[in-house]
Image (cartoon, rainbow, N blue to C red):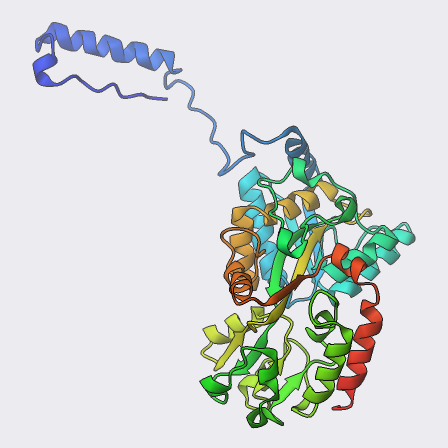
Length: 393
């Protein structure tokens, strides 16, 4: 490499004659020789390579992923950015670690359905249909029984620690190292901004019972939000069941999360409760009259995880990709392709919404495999809530 040695200022130069220039040329020649000269140009380096500070465990993953050469994934096309999101993640990992992994994405069923399929494949000694798993806390809890996912020492390979939320008893590491939290969605109410006047936008749960909203609201057939409200950490089962019976007189029908077009069309004024506001951002970018409000008195935070199946064909690449998602780069990417990030990170877009509920004195529950295990009768309570809502179908 050629290094340019600056000349001293004119008034500091020893001489200006031929002897001085000869000395200067000789000094430059020595410099070129010391740097290897120009006889053999240096080999071009890759656009990016593994960080020089990589831990031994991380370096082992990088080397293993390089040998594997590929990684495949399956989840819903509407989750985590679908095929485009997965391809961007793999491209970013390739750039960051100097790899050339080939990405293959196949659209699949819902998050629990993908986990169940992987568990069945593992039981039959078959390779996993998805080398990496991204899904919800319910699926991670179910996987503890089927031992679907590998136990990994995540702390030895993560670029930064995962912040806990002691106030909500939230630990971002799944039990036995079977996964790491990567994203959060905040439960709220999605509404049509043209049809719902500002004074009718709900800010506390009782606001949903306003007479002006009767026959204008939808809820979900699977009791999204309500099932968490019924836990002891929030409203309790008895209060929630009683409130929901009153609330059913307000609703005009049921719709699934992801059907926000039925709100923008005016078929319903609002959805209470929702599954999170990720889709709202996409609709707003298209100019749709839609927004989400998080109640001041209570909310739930849904957690999403990355995990590596025990029968993954490319476990090193899958682990490396999972850890990348929790880096600052990975979180920014996930926010861009899916409008979600993990609320405990300081840069999170979701963090302020949680902080606002807390500052208002509201209650918050953060779901995780550990939290679901502690709840106990979650499935039974959800069925009772669904039965109440089913009367509107």
